[in-house]
Length: 69
Image (tube, rainbow, N blue to C red):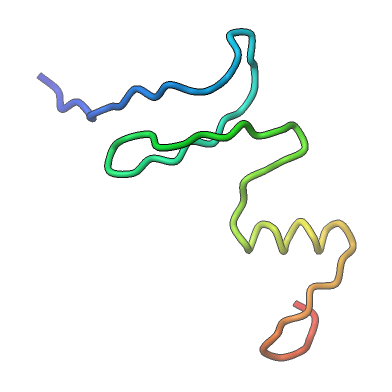
């Protein structure tokens, strides 16, 4: 019998006709909260955010050197 990864079932606070993305916070194997992500929202790390800002034409200044990244 192959190893099976344990899973959890989460109940989400969305309407039955909902289609979209939901961010779920899990603590100790239990879903403790959820939040709908709107079409214009994204989840990203700081490096990704800075890259997107640079691509959009913003100048990102390093607090350490005072120079553009």
